[in-house]
Image (cartoon, rainbow, N blue to C red; front, side):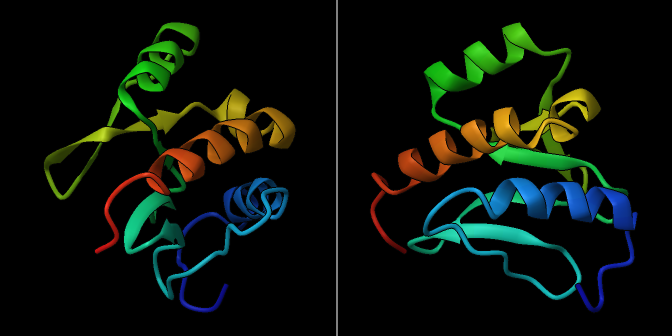
Length: 112
């Protein structure tokens, strides 16, 4: 992705998982992200940390299953986003399932 200054291997792993979800499209020039109806659903920051947006129940399940936490950007916690651990990012099938769940949930939100 032109303009992304983060780790190329992390971008490749993230793109592999994103490509598995019908209707999910990579956007962003310097910070790769996905969105639906104007709401961000996932992103990959410049340090190579991936995050996915989940509903409250899925977020609780994710946080209890993985050694993870709530994502933060620019010193601000992003309460709907969880940090994707390296082991999950390296498993595009399972990570893709979490992306799908987030994408479906965001589709229920009022479009921006």
